[in-house]
Length: 246
Image 1 (cartoon, rainbow, N blue to C red):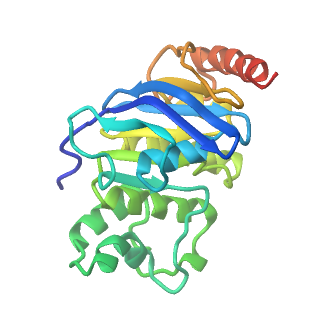
Image 2: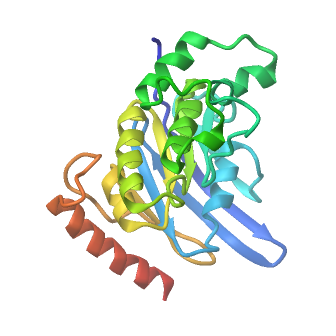
């Protein structure tokens, strides 16, 4: 099966976002290297989701730019995973995974869908309705739907936060392995999740937001929950988040 064929990076330059007199972003500058998994953390209301929507082309910044490192447009090459799996209850798991082409009036690649079902551990569940699945299985289906589109850039907005701790750890590892060839930006409030999954961390400070990318993690993701580098980085990151919120 063919997967992602390019690994574009993302460059954010002088990005500013205002709502009336309220400044959310003030000349944000950062880059995400192609093929890396980056986690972004910050206080609630700091503008993380707004930033994700701007990168996706779903919202406009007051000023600044979002470009891909290969010179091609960023919108149109993005897959998105949100906090809720957003599976349609009247469709089968297979139909949910192939929803994109169905909405575009295209023929679904059923062989690719079956391959993805196998990858996420849902072989034999393609004809099930979402109501028959556990929370972890539903999120596996959401990962398969994300991968189905073969987009090189994946934006994730707290996709695992609704899962129990054990299921969350399993799905985190699965996502890190399956998205290894993608450029990923994950928004999370969980320091352990960020340190387990990412090559690099970004901390968004409160209004007007700024980016701190000074925190570095040893080793490679996905890291084991008891990994010494992870535990050290998690403690340091938590202290950094507390300082950023002050």
